[in-house]
Length: 234
Image (cartoon, rainbow, N blue to C red; front, side, top):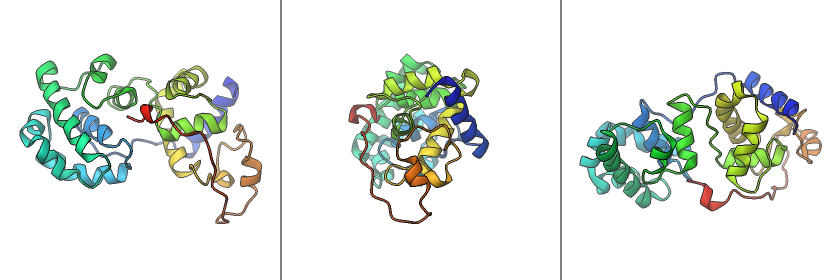
């Protein structure tokens, strides 16, 4: 897409969902950080179910360390990769106490030095909690960037850089939520609902005319598209 097309695309998403925000339940930077770490390869809904009890028993880094790795694991057994995630949440809580007096740092390098925290997780925390125009590229945004022509790329970093170049600076921070929710509920992986897409006009998806002309509810052949690299999912 050109920058003009990108502006039209993002503006359409904004008009359709002006109050978009994270669907993870959190109350501060620590609970957001933990929730995002737990959300890797898991749905926000499943994470919210386990964090209700987890954050009740361990609302901060000190309490999380006191709860222990086994205690954390007992709360999160219903989500994927729970053993590794319990270890990471315990370890990052120790690191926050040792290096940052229990507080979540508002610095990318410091965040990415924490256990279980990669570029995507750091970007979410910087965007949502600290107001930075960071673009976190998850599976939904990676798919949208490539499918629509908004920011094609073979890696999440390439898609991120393409989005930063094309999206107007004043729209970049909220675009994170507009894109994720659009990918989650409209431009879905297997069955994109082009027929109800508010950004239909600027989208460059080659099959959009065919899908957009079909009646809602009609069975569609699943799409085969480039998957997000496994190493970029954390």
